[in-house]
Length: 374
Image 1: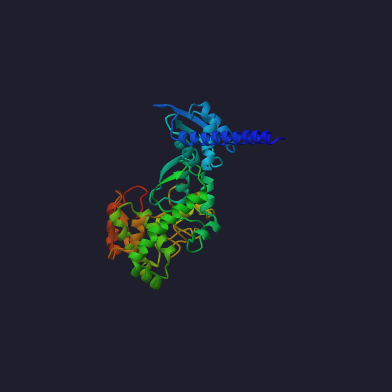
Image 2 (image 1 turned 90 degrees about the vertical axis):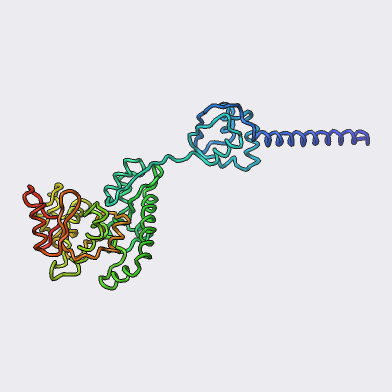
């Protein structure tokens, strides 16, 4: 090849290369400018479904077909420049044609917000109540939640103190915004963490009382939560919780008077309805406590036949009930009886208690003092 021909060939190569570079730069420049130009104004809503595992080339094509971007190629180039083509999340999106490609890509990368449900767990709910509430809200199937709260491995991982059949007592009652179709263990962990925060704050606030309970009664967090769970079921009146706590402590600390029996109906009901294993007498329980249930020694939760605390909590107490255990009223009351209006009469002597029972309970068909200590 002559020198002239070589120079001509080199010129062609250089011109081709320059044209390619100019074209590439132009495409990149267009793509970068393209990122802030919406497809149309004022815009309209468009639904786009991104299937799991779909390639970005398909996503960009769909976006162009639905009028969300002006150029599928430019959208793809912009996403490639940002290194985000592999980070688009599957889901059903409602997008607007007035959104810029930059905003559209950010939305696709962020993903569709998971649907949530607002769930209120009332104070005093037990694990069955909580499982039903979460199931109705679509958060966790009832069976899955119950399996999680009874999972010994999960209990250990969450650091729940003491041997237990379930996480009863440590699922803090509150209002939660939870993701629909959540994992049971994640929801349970959230409720337990909330309990831990509340309990640790109270433990710091009443450190001297916590120390006294450990030294005098050998109690730790589990026993404190257990008594709080009973208080929660005995009264819905905030002002009565410290008085109920005082009465129970007086029963426990005066065994010559009470034989150390708490004698509280909610523990019998719990033992007959919630544990997986139930006594023969509990098989006949139909919502009303009868003599067979009061005298049932097989029911480990029967505080009429077993002194001291039951094996574990019977509900999930809120902050006020926990605080009542750590800061009970200064009261000599040992007995209390319902007025049938949600409140109670508290008595320090058996004679006072009998008068209250005569006034508020006897004469009411089927009514009993709640509870009465011999």
